Length: 280
Ligand code: NAD
Image (cartoon, rainbow, N blue to C red):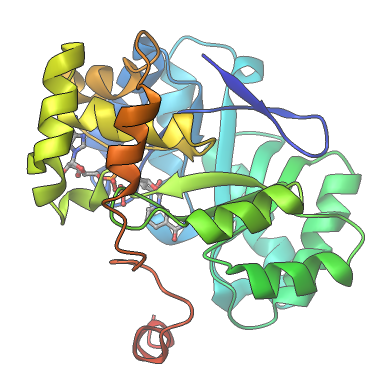
């Protein structure tokens, strides 16, 4: 598995396993164990997914030592006050059955982001979290956070896929040394037309690969880490099988041209979506 060197020297697999909406405990445990068997080493969960215990059961039963795994979880924005954030981190570790976390992200840039960030810094400096980062944070807020805190975020996990490539945001992340990780790299199954785009189908056929593999490979070649989710064994295996081919410059350019520049799922800059998020 290829790895990305984060800004604090910690190495993170470039491809991981997403677990959003995997809420059935038995299915979640089985999927995580299948993913590890297929070669995934990074597992992405969150307090808000309600599946940390099942993810923990999966990493316990997978047969690979804890030290070889990279576990990411996220703090929900309603737990950003200092004591709430500490309690959230302790609860995540207890549910996951681990005594340290590899990566913790602030799930959304709402509420008391600064208080929560300083708790993450505290845990990071105490060696309980190897790397800390943010999610759904646009470059303007990220620059602010970097400027007024000790520890720079190692990662921004943000919706990124064929139709929302975040080309400008990626430049900012590179400039500030923050790694870029794509959530919903397959459009969360909401944008099935992505798989049917002529360019995607033609490129997939040329390499003897599937559209999903081309979409994931495209992100990786753009310097973006990916965490696709599936609960089907054959898709779990398919989604990690993207390291034995490379897209040409011409193919990359064809795919880049399909960017609409608009997120479909998460958008912390859209007041309608933010107002709705406040009900969560
Ligand atoms: P995704 O883009 O990974 O899409 C998953 C869906 O794509 C599946 O449910 C299935 O319908 C389809 N799919 C998967 N593999 C396929 C294949 N090989 N062929 C055809 N279809 C396939 O969407 P996601 O789950 O939302 O995102 C990935 C992960 O990112 C999540 O599981 C979660 O861990 C994380 N995430 C984070 C945030 C955040 O706010 N930080 C938000 C959403 C997701």
